[in-house]
Length: 205
Image (cartoon, rainbow, N blue to C red; front, top):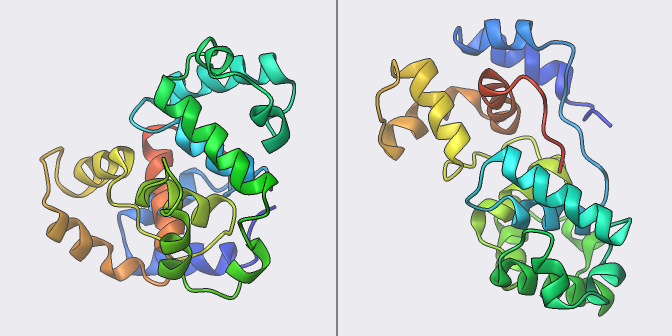
């Protein structure tokens, strides 16, 4: 489901940033989407850590073929070697099982997180083995639909900013933050459109 704020965010970003304006126009038929499942969002982000989108999708497809539906109970029931046979590293297989245990054990209070700020949710998530700031930011964007997340550790976002604002040159984090200042309070939306500049087909977590 597209967030209710999306039309307003598009208008304000197009007005605030002349670089984003044509990207928003070019990709107006698409919008942020989520599968609406908290475990799957985090699991897909873990699978996608430090590999390409294409490689991550391949691993995810093999995982789906093995379990039918990726759920905490299904992953909890799988052996580590079976998860590795899907293309996961041993470390990521253990991360998915540990994450599944948090869900089956009721250790996450998703309802309470709705009332928490972004940094507080991130602080809760990074307590879990295998979840760092980038994974937590993907959860904020794709599951919680938070509008103002800036995942500067994301290599795709870095590349898009360098191409769109720096003629392909490497930019410092300080410079990228300065460029992104005018995107607030819609930095998640700006990020999503910059991803589209690299790959027009949206990724859903």
